[in-house]
Length: 472
Image (tube, rainbow, N blue to C red):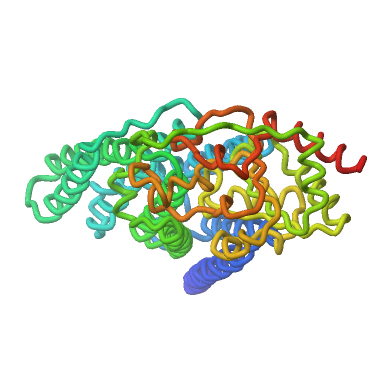
């Protein structure tokens, strides 16, 4: 018997050590994710940490009585769920297009939030659960992450439109205070457990509705911020679930995800000159007030003239946007960049913090095309060079180069820092048409005296430019 107890004790020590080792793997993975060249390896390190925690938990975890392992029936269900999830995840990851990556991230956030909320819902009535506050926070945060991420997916995929009105801000604040009041009441009430369970389901419904109303009004450049915030919520909810089960791996993993997501959210808010509360209450909507400015005249450029202008420039800056992702033009863009550099042209990419539909969207897109990381220059670093830039090539970007951000107080993006493409000596804008950007507002950069429009699919236009540059 003593030998068995000693074996179990050693098993517990090994289990705890495996959680610590998994946490170290998570840290290494997060560190590697900060650079595109090492991001793939970072994912593998983090995945190895999660696999280690899962395997050791299944093998060494004891239920209640220290001599009782995980029940066989439960183990079969767990392994079946892991198998199904792994197959579905592998298929989706291989088939998803780069343009749909933000939608996939939203679905991941939603699934993580739903799992944490369900854990909290189940464990609230468990007599052995001594973490009522943590359980309620997991329920609320997980529910908001779930419903908010589902709405974000719908908006990013074009299935839903922004619903913006000034009163929505007050509605969101009302829901926020109602959720907080619900948590406080459940903590202090002496009502029977049956009554508390009814109230918990009411809190669940209230949190789900708040997640919807919180995301519905948000549009334009705020969507990447919201995706990052929802990702942070999912991590925090996972940490709450870890506290419920006193599982160090879940706690540490959730804290890492939550902290990384929150830091990224705050950095993007700072880059956009917006407060986090301003984003959360839905103060930014698509559309916005119209401008009194006259549009002016559009001037087009031929492929030949554009190729000549680029080839005989000293410095060219490329501003990538969602249109580049839609056209899957990153590889052709990289080819054009190499051609120009072979002609002695200095080429850099100007990266706005919220370009695309999720944080780091353009960095990932260009890294996929093997664009050197040192050529990707952040907005604050590239803007001082704009007056000395011969040509700025805007490919599918809109709101992040829109001068309305600084000269039109009626614009919903007023005050948002932008890439100052308008300061360059020449501007070439590649677009399929004159459609407005994600914020649904007019971009007067297109009517600038220095701007020339090159209409067409971005990949086709870039391919024509590459052919023309080669013939010069």
